[in-house]
Length: 81
Image (cartoon, rainbow, N blue to C red; front, side, top):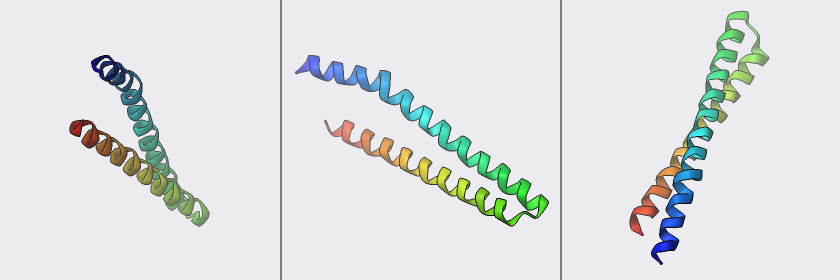
């Protein structure tokens, strides 16, 4: 049983943690892209692009919330076992 736990911990630390960091960075970059699009469109008075920027910011935040929630749930469950 200890071998299985060690293997599972190795897989998680070598694969899952970097994946969480990568997805967090992508979601944050998506959010920042939305901010740039929003500000640029607001400056140029382009209403369609303002809506596009807001959507990018919204989906970036939703992605970050999902990623951090999943990470928190995973940490909570891993502490129980």
